[in-house]
Image 1 (cartoon, rainbow, N blue to C red):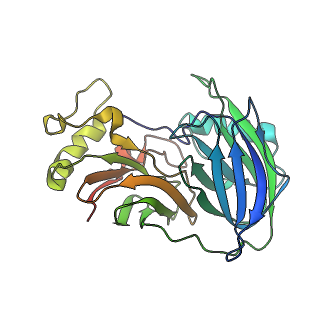
Image 2: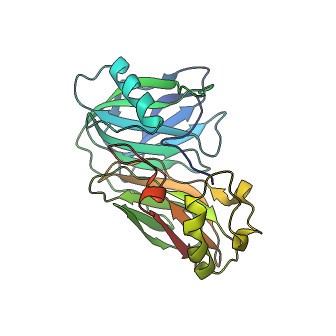
Length: 278
């Protein structure tokens, strides 16, 4: 069983602030792969931030904008986040999180004013994760609206609401009220949604050594998992790139742990849903 860990992604990047759009005053940020560090502007304008990832990034490369309590040091943050990405508790000192996953089109998030760390898992992270971290201050009033997309995924503790059409850009919103969530997508092709729903519980609960249910024998799980969203704290949302085709059956999962730690939400609370694109 494929399980994506919290804020999974191995890449190195540099961030440069670009110009603003005419309509919604979105701040454009280009994220480029560097050697072994993250470079971010000292200040970012609050509100809609449009992020483009460039360079040597994979389909699941992710950069996170994490708002923290004033006075949090980089050393404290790094120590805490190493525990979080390993499946441990999410401290209250982490106030907000907006994640951006690499895609063919820019992803947009809304950042509130405050003190942030911009980070990713570092290249070469193994049993002991290494984090690439840099500080940023977000200033301004935080106004703005996310751009229109081909549909929405809404997470709550612990369920999804899906309203999508065929397309390649979608919006994810975490309505919480308490837990961090993200979107992980799997394509089950032309399988009947009822068949997927019937067999998905056993598939999710199985370990990686257990073969998938017989009904999934023709599913290519090496390629079934699609790009999803970044990680968002309650009340936060953003856009992400993924291709959904009309007539296909998909499943959406959350593989994050609770704030107190524990198993992924898909395993602990059956936080997944099956849908067919019209």
